Amino acid sequence: MTTGIPPLRTGTKLAFGIGQIGEGIQAAVFLMFLLFYYNQVLGVPGTLCGIALALSLIFDAVTDPLVGNLSDAWHSKLGRRHPFMYAAAVPLGVCFFLLFNPLVSGDLALFGWLLAMTILCRGAMTLYHVPHSALGAELSQDYHERTILVAMRHFFGALAFIGVFVLGFFVYFTATDAYPNGQLNPAAYGPFSGWLAAAMAVSVWYSAFGTRQRVPYLPKAAPTQTFTLRGMIDETWLSMHNPSFRWVIIGFMVIIVGFGAAGALNMYMLTFFWAFDATAIVIVLVAGPLGSMVGYLSAGAFYRRFDKKHGVIIGTAIWLGAHFVSVPLLLAGWLPPPGTGGLLLAITALSGLGAFGIAQLLVGLGTMLADIADEHELLTGRRQEGIFFGAFSFTNKTSAALGSLIGGTVLDLIGWPTGTAVRSAADVPWDTLVSLGLVWGPLSVLLALPGLYFINRYCLTREEHNDILRQLAARHAGSAGIDQAQNAL
Image (cartoon, rainbow, N blue to C red; front, side, top):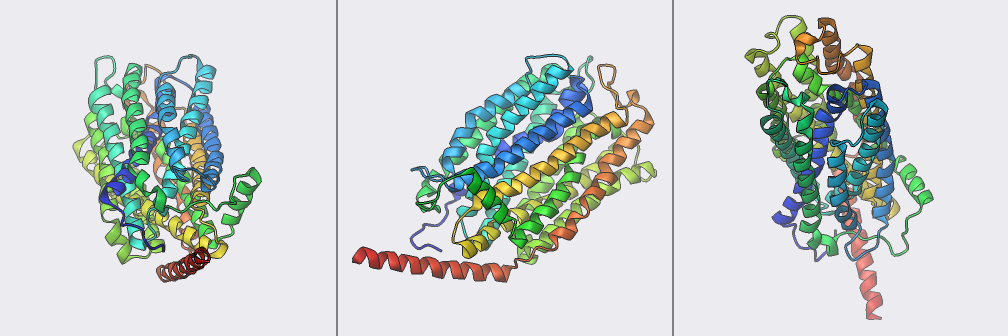
């Protein structure tokens, strides 16, 4: 839309994508280990853990639109997004390390530590996540190049998941006589979190540093644009008046509640319901990121075949179907028994298939938001990717908070046993295991299913977006002509 902008270099794209490693590490650890560590390893009641995680997510959700709006209006030589990305790196690493190295003991004290450190960790990530996401929409206005950028970002996020699982189960959570399931060993979490904290800080800093040369070509805040709390609330409310954005928000919000409830229980399923050993757990966990990576690599071709709305619906349906069938099939006797190689093969295949679907969901939604930001600029004359990604993250995390609360509360409702006496599936009653599996599988899918209806209401087509870009190009060309005429005078 603006002349004189050099092509986006491969190194810049890679630096943008590598930044997702930090987010991927936090997402993998929070999804798989955080609840498990505080509940199963340290013995904090599941409901208290669920409340702490939900409250931290709600706090995080509130700060997302705040940072989005603040970065939209930021004036500096480093541009609108980069100052926040630089500022996040060190606090993020420090808070993450402290989260898994509590300096207190006792249920209430650990509850307070979990709440405080998770809030600080998520707050530091918000300083990075929202500007980084908005930067992806600003680096390119091309319909397909945006898809590639989003896919590349999530590809590196999937690599981070693999790194977390390999480091954890092959280095720190190896089986010992005292802990046949090494993920129950409290001493392993200190060094495990230390290496990951360092990797997070480095990846976040490098992403900002490696994309710095694009700052002169990125959209800038209007000279009169400033941040106010009232302005943030008004802009966030205005964003919800965009029908495409509203339906995307509602649909993903519903989907993420089911995803969050299932994700909070993943480690319990792998350790106790499926009764896998450390090697088998790694195989299943790595199958997810590998399936996602295949999805991200094929996203360009996938979204040339399908428009974004139908691609998101198809991807979500693939994930829901793969996630739904495993528990009913096992309970019906149509899958091999827990702990066997045959069951490992089946669960690995379903995990990879579901992750392929999730990849299409995430890529599609990320590029939808970038297109919506173009539509918003055409209608209002203001370039505000930050407010859209911030508002989207707000609803995402609020819904994930509900999912985490459901997951933590379920553990208490079904009477899940904790403590050093629980070493394997043999130490858990069968009816408790069945309840766990039904909540993780069929119930979580039923919670997410209505989201497909709302996503289907999204109404911005490829042709309409191309027309928006043409109108914006004409507007920018006209503005440039006026500026040149004024300068000549």
